[in-house]
Length: 201
Image 1 (cartoon, rainbow, N blue to C red):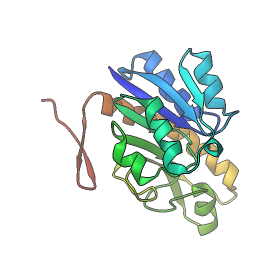
Image 2 (image 1 turned 60 degrees about the vertical axis):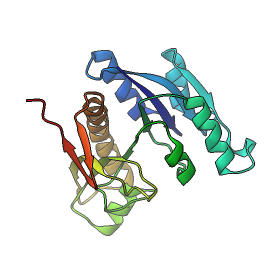
Image 3 (image 1 turned 30 degrees about the horizontal axis):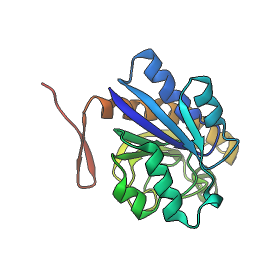
Image 4 (image 1 turned 90 degrees about the vertical axis):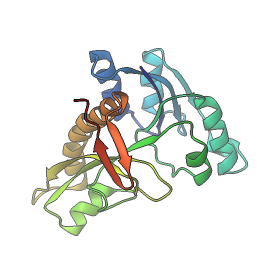
């Protein structure tokens, strides 16, 4: 069973999808702790409702990003996977280098297209016909780590950022738990930029 730490800034819907997969027995793991940079994040409420340890860690209470992230790492302690679930702060190189385990993220675009904020808006404004979402491991670049899973969503002629985001979110809730499941089962092998699946035959 793997122990998972979650960093979230918002409502925590992707975290909830992972929780539900754990409860169904799809993921052999448990969420150990949930941390947020936002005091009123829905993710903290969801964690409290499930009896999961959770904390608001206010970045403004620290002198700089390094000391803030050192506190995050102290609270995380030992775990097997860190999941970013709508965490809206960019992690520093020190956090990534000192993290006790791999870090996984979900991004609402088909990377490497449209990294950074507002991937859905970028897709609509660019005029692409297919958008989607990506689960990837985190490295020191911006949404540039090795890709684990992707799901495609057609962009409709009358789509807005909001309507496209809603359809992409449905796919996020499918592929993020699937990626965590594969990680928990030891199926994922990172070979340079390529994430391969281990064969257990």
